[in-house]
Image 1 (cartoon, rainbow, N blue to C red):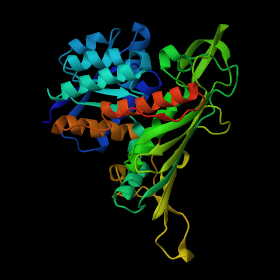
Image 2: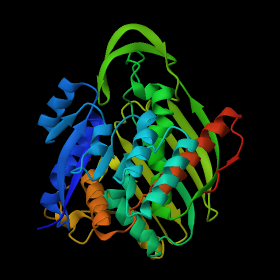
Image 3: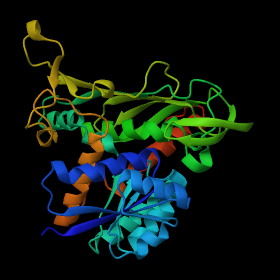
Image 4: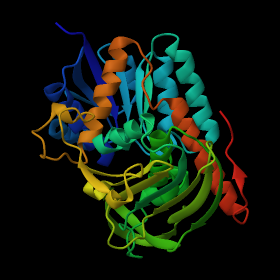
Length: 390
């Protein structure tokens, strides 16, 4: 009999649905040292939370997330709420001795993220584990890209080009959902999707951004109030409200190894649905990835004779590729949801073995400090701004 690890999840909307699917699937595809149990989901509405529990596979529904902390059968708190509640929930959970998985960005401010990282460090000394949910690290092609860099196949890193392009709010009549409100979300495209490409760049290269120069823009400054929202869809209500976050962020940066980097995060790239793209150029080769073709990694080996130069496609579905061997036969691709399954797998293994998972809350704080430097630079006329050290 394996030890049971009970999960309590806070929030059941877009991210809650995605995390629920991961908790349902992980034990069926990976040989885990523990058995995950979907104990309870918490939400504000008793009726809606009960419906979500039944639909998503949770045994119980709670209308107050604090009740999850009192349950002896809950060992993990999975935070899938807007950013304005991350710090409160995580700090309480860690103090209660619960392991914490927290959606990104870690918090709405650096101060909140610092408090969370400090609490996580203290809790780790008591055997309590925590991780921030930067799921794109767990895409097999992204993990393979990191492996290529670690093996030295790119040599010295000269350039990183990273983009995250979406178009779901191009329509100026799209309602004012919580992601467009600074008090709820912290920032707009910058924190929501820019956090992912910052982490992807640092994860793949093993280097850090040391400074940035940035521009941000809000193209549509007023929108209809939302009558309700689900995922990235919403209905319009009565009246209009002010958009208080960025619609797009564009910034350049310098890497700790001396290389140069550029980043673009926008929800106004019409025709682009979920295009997380990254290209890394090194002295010995290059790699490129686009999430809209997520099972492919493109690699150029510059050490070959010039007659063989050019990018070649690596289909990342072989059994010895990261994570892929647990799934389907070679060539049978994975989808968006699988990175979350890999995330829960790694987290459960860390809990079982008593090791610190990555990305840690300290890593989440690191991303938060880059986001803060971007916002400061943009507010100060794109002045080059140093990223605060941990």
